[in-house]
Length: 100
Image (cartoon, rainbow, N blue to C red; front, side, top):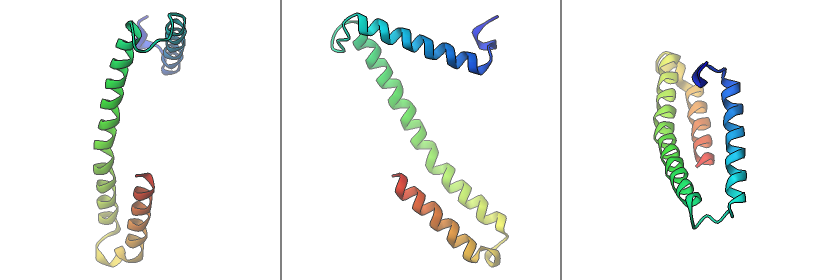
């Protein structure tokens, strides 16, 4: 049975165990981030982490704008928009500003 066929919770548990083992090995090897193989791993992990966070930032704004547009169109025009639309825009705006 390949790792990809494992249930998701077993994959997560395996990743946690591997991360724990890797951390213990890195700590036992001196834990010095500026030298050796640990610095290479830290550099790669930092790069991948920055890519992941930038991708999340690119997805969030279009997702919020599209959900607002679909919600407004689902209300059924200007008549139904009224107070509900203003409350929705206020809630999204408040959540957006507080999250930033």
